[in-house]
Length: 510
Image (cartoon, rainbow, N blue to C red; front, top):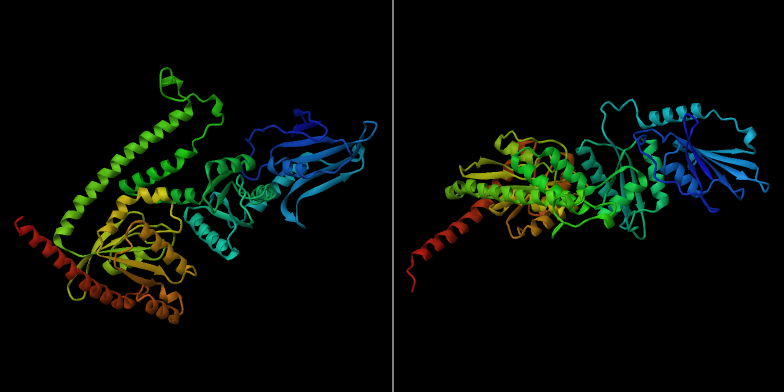
């Protein structure tokens, strides 16, 4: 048997189990925020004189109980030894809880209200430091992988940058290497229990997984931990939603978010669902879930139409530019490689350039005049990232169409990033998926002021590129010379092809 007792000493729930144990039903979550405990302590019987079990510790952690106490039962049915535990604000000697061992109930001398008040105060102090000036959502980053540890750590480092860029406060990073990923929780239940305890100790309310969770996994982990759970794709979508400024950008982000949301609209009881369609299945017969799905699909249809109109408007705006015959250079590259800074330095533009991921979402075009008086159009585009969500890539096709019209792609690379080679491969993979792999590309190795000069020289020679610092105009003349030389080499061939096509049009049909 078991009792759940609240802080006023009143019995909130009576539990009756079997000789093996108890099953605690779902409890209310009103005290689940921040460093608050559940406000309940569990007192239950152990029939064979055994101490607290692993299931007891899991209940203590996952339910955030104030205290758990097991009363052993003597052969005559009288109470025997007592075993108790409460959570610790910080891990101590590889333990997350403090144990209590009393030989008889008459010797139990614990002031529970004072103990719990003190415990919650310590949890609050452990979770918040004096350095926390701004109230930000506190997150734990989790990586569960079968890949080599170095690869997983690099991926988590990028996830931390994404979380910071989204305005979150990262309070801990957890990496678990497994031989096989758990299909339901990704990690084992024991590790998940440790994760819940850690979230309580650092006052985290958000778990971010460095993987794409399917709807079932996200639901299972959320139900198990009672914390908000998102994956890498959701985090990127949230960043894009924060940064979108233009009407076009907002439409594209909303479309990507709805496509991500649609398969995750799942009811709790499919057996009670009444499917829409047919006689008697319309109108009030729809469940809320089906109404939500229908509204999402309708909104997606409207967004598709509006984005198609945006594409048409873009084609119209590109018309005069194409008729002028000005060459087009598009700046591409990994996010935060320095693309916007380079555009600003080359053209004296005032595009927002910040040291964070995805600072630029909306493309910007400016004219650039080379030293020999030739003019070109140079365009800044949205940055790429490893495993860019497919829905986001699809939604941003209207923007990325700019790349299809480019005569030259300027691939900006952050040479100071230790993972720059992986970033180069990621960008080239995305360009290939957009069927732009055959476009002329000039690689520009940026931020040479932050690396060894020999590295910059070696990489620029190896890739036939140019090494620059986008913040230093003195490093840009070699880049301008290469751009002009490349355009001079490309453009005459295009003009000849255009002239030949015009001549062919004048030849009468046979």
